[in-house]
Image (cartoon, rainbow, N blue to C red):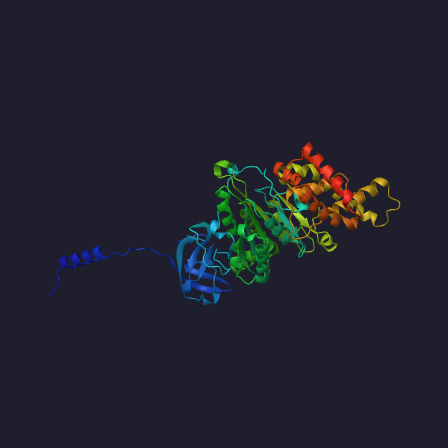
Length: 503
């Protein structure tokens, strides 16, 4: 029996009405080439820059090269499972990471996934890893100190909240030690810390996390790890992921600190990715936009005005130099982006001066404005004394018999200052202790103490102050300024202690 056209129409109409499933359009492409962690995909005409795409077997990738006839995708999972001819689907989401209070105390990878074996992270909000930095109009000048607990840093190259202070030096000169001591020093404070480990051995990251846990610092810290065994893509993403987590706290009106350990390996990972994506190489085979890579990352650290939340994100990027060469491509790039640098010298480190801060090459361009007044009152001359000492010590090694009295006094003072500024790792000091010992140095109370006894003098002096004059220390911490009363109390305390100290 023949079916009339009218009947066919009604059947189709009914079927359409009964069809309840939503129709969605998905941008689909095909892998035309895959290898070395990079896939070229045909199709995906509507994909965006840094958008996440999905390969079979739930493997994710990130679109970085948007060419006329293909898309260059960096694979974030097991690259061996991505084959030519595989279907690729766009997700409509740019690369993002979970953020919020729930992240504190956890170790995560560059995608925000927990890798510490403590179960899932219960967080409700996500943030894109890439974001335009806050406008200059929404920023406030740096005026609040960020205490590291390290005498030589807080005294001579101070760091303010919202500042970007570079830590630079050769391999094994104590760069990470300064960063970890700074995190430990924030225990009990209001500063949230984010430690981004890029290209490090997994064993070293485990060791660092163990140290932070033993000193009770993991409670206020997030560790983002992209180990040397991870893909170049994850190492590239890790600093951006950490910054997104820090921005969440900054925009809530809180203060955060982010440490990038280190950006040299970050640049290497980006170079590897760029070469595999067939981007044209430039100087030292780095792509032309390697400066933009670090500038758009570090510019996101700022101190916001009250209308924008009033929070801050302080950045301590670490750069490794080769044989003390600060004129290399990546070091000069990052020096020009940051607001000062702490330069660590291998010769000082090997001679037992730790932290091995080179006073002549270290500078803080804005931290002086944020330095606590009490520290400024006692540490003003330290930098000059130390710089003059380092100049004179070269000549003095040929003999001091023919030197005048003023030069010998300068050398003696420099030796005392050098000894006092030495500090053991994992022993950060609060501002009260720092100011009290610096006051003793600058006022000449340690000039008659033998060089080999200065360390013991300092240890016993701090114990004496804690037990007998704790009110003076508390007053310095509270007021952050030396008034006549505090100065008088400090002078009498030092004089009393010197009578009891035998050397």
